[in-house]
Image (spheres, rainbow, N blue to C red):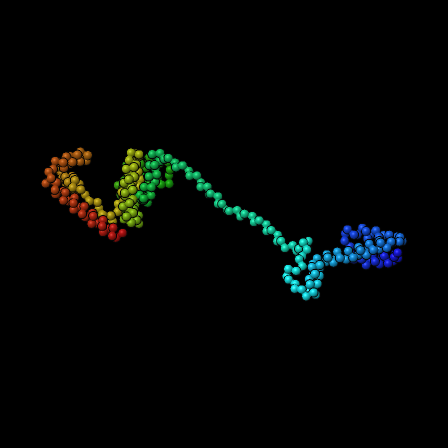
Length: 322
């Protein structure tokens, strides 16, 4: 029999036990503390537990200890130790060397450009004939130019009416002034004739200054546009449309006269048609022109050819100057 103190010391000196031996050891320790005597075979069992626990603890601390012990024994006996005799690590003690699998990369979404929607085209407006004419007239008027003052001369009657109705309004004053124009004295008429002459000269000077402010080429294009305007607007209005008369420019070469024009001017200057109205006079001269032979027309044809040569020469000089 062992004393109770010896068993406690023995139990205190026992190293850390394996998990499956702890219940047995706890039972022995509890019996010793309560004052019970233990048989010798129980003590032998405790020693066995200590020995086994020590071996287990050592094996846990160094799993390769049995292999190393065998290697040392071979070395002491003089046997050659090969690399194959090196202790292998216990299966449970292998270091975890496996790398974590990388997370699969998310597929990169390709940026797909959305097709840009083009704004729907508005259907073209179908213009009527009247709207087309107005559009053409607008474009022609841009080229035709616009005079600052009218080129036509004013009369003494217009000057007198303007002076009389100045500062007054109404149709009554206008009618009264028109009626009184017949009763003005010769001195008053001379006064208004002088005013009319001054105003016409001022208007003509302003008109010529406006013409000179444009190049001859601009005046030529303006006259072409005015000619088209007269044709487009023919029959549209009872009175003549403003800014459609040809612009008079003394820098422009005078257009050549034809053989018929020379013949008409010569016959009209004679006294054969004195007292005959202009329309009837033109009809008679035209009949004479048709009755002329080729030899009789040749003189007028030569004059017309000379005029065309003169116009071509002056036009070429003007084009070079531009």
